[in-house]
Image (cartoon, rainbow, N blue to C red; front, top):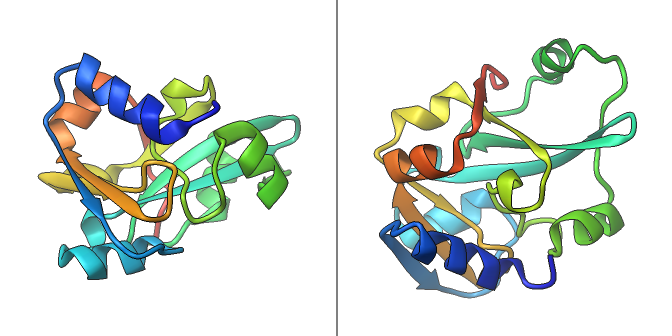
Length: 154
């Protein structure tokens, strides 16, 4: 994807998903984004790109949770799993680490979302750039992205 920010905005608009976009200083973490926007850390969608043998997997967790790699390995039925390198994130997602977005559907990779994300009315995420954040309703996100829901966090 050449410009994930534009692709995400086009996806939201073409699916009539209401959203709010915020511009802010460049950030590197979900925690920083939610602090700047004054929203709960659990509303932040932390997007992590991992590699399972020869396949990439996008994992989405609430900002207040940590990835339970044992649960993820069990879900994927694998013993080999690692975080993607910065070069791989750039190649697969077209962005830098810290700007990953919760839209595996737009880049053709499997996406697993932790059940705890569904406890939010609104979610906030990076749209592939570090100086913007987008907020949408969980219901609109879930209905249009159709993520695979699993238990991944602790």
